[in-house]
Image (cartoon, rainbow, N blue to C red):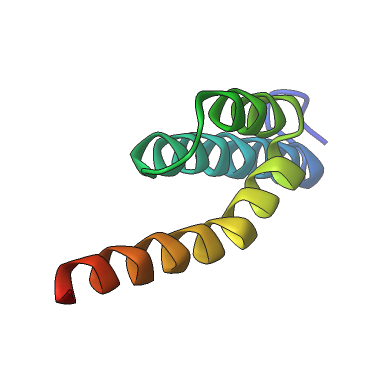
Length: 81
């Protein structure tokens, strides 16, 4: 085996790291674009997303749909009145 050619597991490791980086950035941008969250919640979610990239990002994407649908239904109700 040539030491200059990366092994298969090196490629897998780099791919997992790149995926974690992308998920972290996308989750953070999504968090910053979400309206209606208090400053404390934004700080706590930011810490969770950056401290534990896969779990924090996954949890944010799971909770985001609930927050977004709640904010959206609240906005449409206030517009229709």
